[in-house]
Image (cartoon, rainbow, N blue to C red; front, top):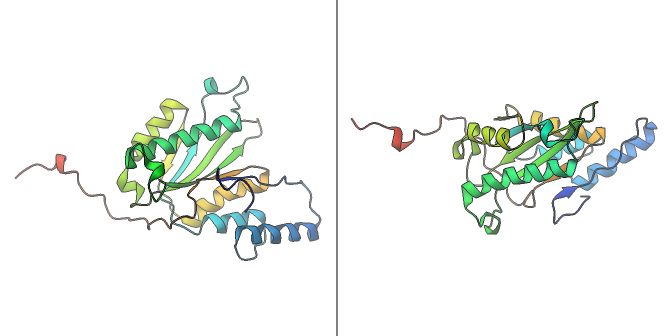
Length: 209
């Protein structure tokens, strides 16, 4: 895989607008080999298969307030990545304590892709999974929605309806010159499957009969 494995950052190659058919086919084959996936027809398909090989428990869309961006409303990619890392670090700290990074699992796994609008503004799409259970049952999504909104701007957090859909949604920006960042522990363990059973009632809310 390309990029710095220590930081989990994957640098994606630039995408010319026009490809010679043979050149494109060769490039796709190279990327498929780097990611360890079967031969794929497109770059985004290769990254989609790569990201789709695990159970993701949270799918997020993250935007930034203009106050946190430049005059045009565009936030710098480095600032956006720092914001997202702060977000997942805060989730890890709630779940696994201050020393979460020293635990064998290394906290939640995640992948985040950048999307640039035509006006230059950037927002993020992410997938996250916890090692110790379904994230939907471990944290309150509305709490972390409010957290991002308070710190950075509008966002949407939801359970993936289709693993392949959310993986492809992030991967498609690879073919638009975007980047995908991965957590340091990406691939270190396989996330547990999503549980679609109702979350257990909180004992404090159960009235004694």
